[in-house]
Image 1 (tube, rainbow, N blue to C red):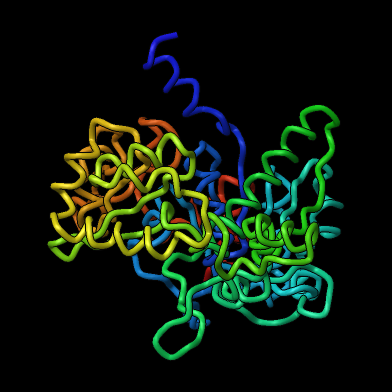
Image 2: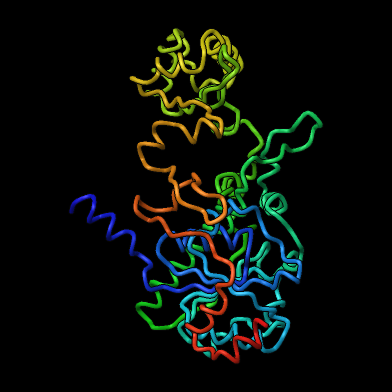
Amino acid sequence: MTEDQMTETMTKDLQGITMLDFGGVGPVARGARVLSDLGARWLQVVPPASAGRHEPPWHTYGALRGIEQVELDLKQPPARDAALRIAAQVDIVIESFRPGVAKRLGIDYDAVHTRNERVIYCALTGYGQSGPYARWAGHDLNYQAVAGGLAAARLDQRGVPALPTLTFADSAGGGWMAVVRILSALHARARTGRGQFIDASAAEGMLHLNALAIDEYLATGSGEGTGGGMVNGGYAGYGNYGCADGRFVSVGAIEPKFFKVLCETLGLPELAARQMDPAAQEDIRDRFTQAFATKSRDTWMAAFKTVDACVAPVLSIAEVTADPHWRANGMITEYTHPEHGEVRQLRPFGPPGTERGAPPKKGQGPVLLKEFGFSEAEIKTLLG
């Protein structure tokens, strides 16, 4: 199969799948973005602008490429009924209301399933549908906190866990875990013809992301993930080091063969035999620190370019967007935004060729509703 044929095949993975999103932002937007990039049609119900809805910056969530929006006030019975009519014709419904809200609005799984037995309904919340935390409000930081992620963080200058720089819970814990569950449900439906309800939460997803530390503690009764292990600060061969120009390199030399090459390249071959000696780690770390500080980051990267030592540069965001590796893989793409002109963005998830159209246009609602069987009179009543 040629590269063009592979790309053509992969870009159609979810072609023909339609998703209705009641979530808007956060984990749901991350998950819906991925499903859309893989070919699913993305329909989103948003509150009317007069309801004071929260609108993220225009460039977030892939600038909402390919999304089709309709404004419906779900607190009003006609709008609720309209949402159910649309839900009766889609493959996936995804929402992020706190437990009980969707039922109160009349758009919960039971209401949708009555009209659409094949629907895959994903309720993606912060803490899940049950348990003491289920009705708590929360954001990414909170979900990481209850999953042990913050306890494993280094303390900042104030002596408290440092703020994570990435929104792991919203993206990987919430959105991506939901995508896995939804794709699995689609596969099951292909066999059985039946849809299902999915209870997904960002906090539960974070538990799985923190599985190394949690499983270690459950199995041994020790190990809080706060330091002392191979990947959390206990060993000098796994960490970040400053260079002469104020920039940094990351070192992940876990296996002895990589650690040996690391030591040789730094001019410290005698340290290789001491890799796993706990008592030697501070001395090794100090000598690595001194060695890396003698040259600039890029000079060191030139030295490590032709050897295998698990060393990589710590890139700034600006450097990431210009990096030759990501450029060669087509990870930075351009498209025309209706208001902002030519814009560079991270390429949609998936292989090259998966670009998913432009951001939503104003006034899409009437066209979308007409497609789903609404009369002109009904559209006028719903949208005014």
